[in-house]
Image (cartoon, rainbow, N blue to C red; front, top):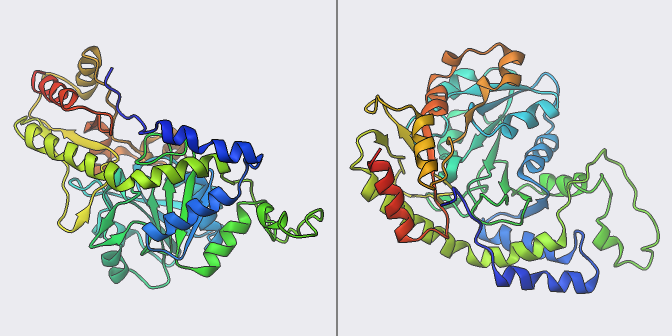
Length: 376
């Protein structure tokens, strides 16, 4: 089976676990701190705060920004469900906006139409590794509206040389195995705000006034820290941090290899009339976390499901790109949405197809995938 995704991990990741295991310090510690420091440098931000998932990262960012009950947060409908869920977890209202059919990212005009006096934040999603132009958005919205970058798919991505997670008020990254680099599970907050950086560090550790690793360096390490905030246990382990450090060393080469795979796909798939290929604006570095195409109306004899079934029989794993969250049962029932409320998101929900795209793919695999698609 040619997998839809496969992490690029090996002997060096395995070896990296020895030091924290031998030291006995396997919870959040110096390895996590080093991982944070290098991640911040790569993404050109002052602060990087490691957590246990991108969902946790988004949740803490919303809390740090003071988003609360009766506030509204705009979220693209075509995304993973956690982008919306975190808004409800802080008591705010999710307001969906539609997307652009070529980039799969937010539709600026539809987003602007959703802004009102209750709008306190926008969660942008750099979907599949292609950044939203955050600079452009900043110029067309009110200055008091906070911008959160959902960079789950966008580690190492950039637009006009601005790294993902560096222009909004804060960014949230994922290290799930389907992402560019992985720590098994895990996430990262990026920000240039000292307040957000400090507050999220405290919130991830139960609201403790000092981290465990820093407390143990003090002579009075036997004393408990003070807790002046209602926090969470969202910490990353040093085992994950050690693996993350090895993965970061590979980041540039992983993205370069994925870009070459994408170039081959563009060249070979453009001959298939019933596939619409993704768009990449100039001056954008796409990390190609996923390569997602659209099945258009030029193929009438097969549905997307049938095409996926045929590919599966041939040993090729595929997935829908992601889902239109407004049509998932919980949100559909909560807000009484209809499919036509966000037509482009709904179109992508029904027609998007993610084909295998990872660093273990061979040219033979790619040619087989292309030949199988062309033969449908």
